[in-house]
Length: 197
Ligand SMILES: [Zn+2]
Image 1 (spheres, rainbow, N blue to C red):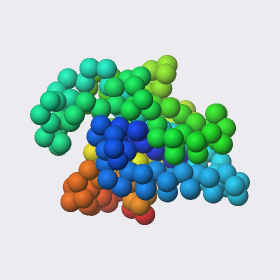
Image 2: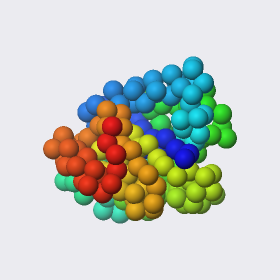
Image 3: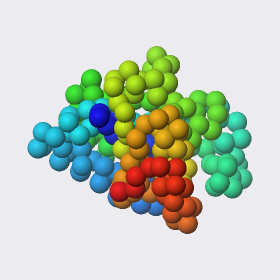
């Protein structure tokens, strides 16, 4: 069984102080980076996670996903505009990934013209969808981390289950916009068949 590490939306705009900062994001990103660095140090990374995928919200014109009066459930302040610094990965993550061989990294963007909470709505630079990219590399399981537990992490993990992947959520490497909704999302994922670590 080959397992990909799926790092969801570890972007500057979702970091505390960003356009749509999520409390706890920095802590989650540090834990993700530490795990990657530990795996690089002891040589187990390529075995545990032969592929690392980063997803990025990459909005050009996402319609009513952006709002001047957001409800923080279905509409949000302007965030992760394609090509802006806020849409870049947090350096905590990008620096950790520098040690990973480029063949083992996959960058997926999503939401150019729609909300796209799930990484499975995303694609690589050539437009190939995530599920197809994972299958082409023999990936049968995914470990999901990142932000936000109650939105993009939830949607990505649920789609991964639906697409037939074995799914683990590494809960302490995620952060939620709303703690109650985050807990509800974890319960929903458990019921959908994901393993929660
Ligand atoms: Zn968005």
